[in-house]
Amino acid sequence: QKEVEQNSGPLSVPEGAIASLNCTYSDRGSQSFFWYRQYSGKSPELIMSIYSNGDKEDGRFTAQLNKASQYVSLLIRDSQPSDSATYLCAVPHPRRGSARQLTFGSGTQLTVLP
Amino acid sequence: ETGVTQSPTHLIKTRGQQVTLRCSSQSGHNTVSWYQQALGQGPQFIFQYYREEENGRGNFPPRFSGLQFPNYSSELNVNALELDDSALYLCASRSEGTGELFFGEGSRLTVL
Image (tube, rainbow over all chains, first blue to last red; front, side, top):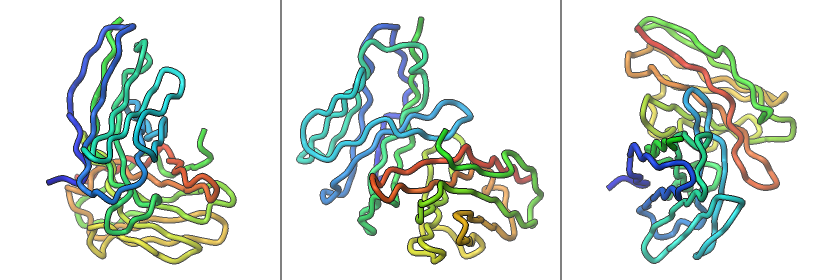
């Protein structure tokens, strides 16, 4: 089992719709979770972090965490073509337990269609 | 703009050669990490340096080595290059306050 798993996509949504990106992780002890956005040819950029069960909202982005199910998701409301990118889920490495050493999923490629 | 700069941005090497990639972190960020990102994959942790000492390493062979210098710069060295080493190499510095990782734009290495 991979430590961090994401649906690779690609995921296409029409402009204005809600995009839902999902991630599962294997280590029950994980305490922090990160979503990065990566535009083609660019480096990852942190867009959301979440540490507690429930929802965390930041503008059009909502991160949802369910530690019992080992599941974290990212919702993008009112999707815009500029949201088209690969979204990476990242969790601190279980054996090292440090937020500085992240294990990334393989990413979900999102395309928002005008 | 993350304040993390990497060089070179692109380079081409042949199998068996050696390469050095460089990174300049934000002032005050004492932790720097290096990641390898193959095409279509997420970044994979190579190693991390804190105050010039390696304090964490991923599943990479010893031919991947690094250095960190007092001026917040660092290097990734790869010896005996293999075709599978072709990837985007990302340097990330860590904010001591928030723990957030700031990535540079990466160095894209192609091994022929």
